[in-house]
Length: 171
Image 1 (cartoon, helix red, strand yellow):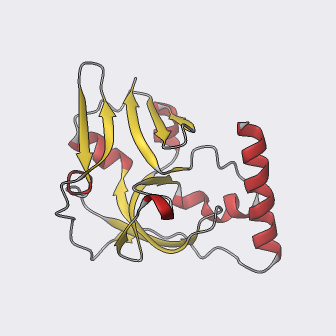
Image 2 (tube, helix red, strand yellow):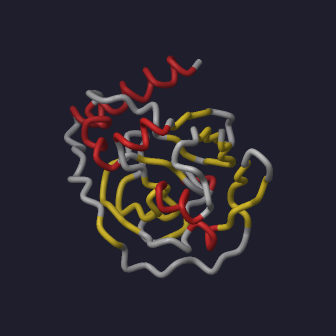
Image 3 (tube, one colour):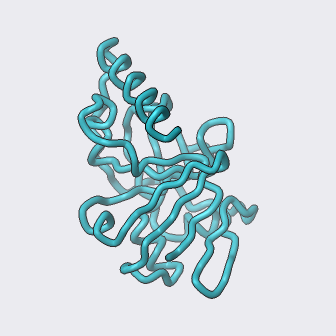
């Protein structure tokens, strides 16, 4: 099932590229947005000894960063969120942990400590300044801004990109 989904997204990305919908440079910079005050839980963090919910306010308590890009699955514009490493530090998650992200449709992505050393991951909470919702790939999504153009062109794997995240397991 996963390989079929990946092939479909690769075809869509290639089609978008051929149609001239090229990605913009994925430069990431500090955002001018203020952190959210919304305390509604948006995802659950499962640690080795505890489980806790995180709200948008919890996530955005670390500095927000933003980038403009074309997401290979459709959304495009100004994505804002927090660096995954910053969130891990704020939540007391050991950088040697493997993270398992689970989407609302049960799609799963694993991010290893080696992955975290090789790439910078942005946990996105907003698009064009507005909070992501389930209907627009939210409430959070994980992207790799440095790979955005290559993923959209189909020359890099999108296996670490996940949206509609409902849970993160620390392993």
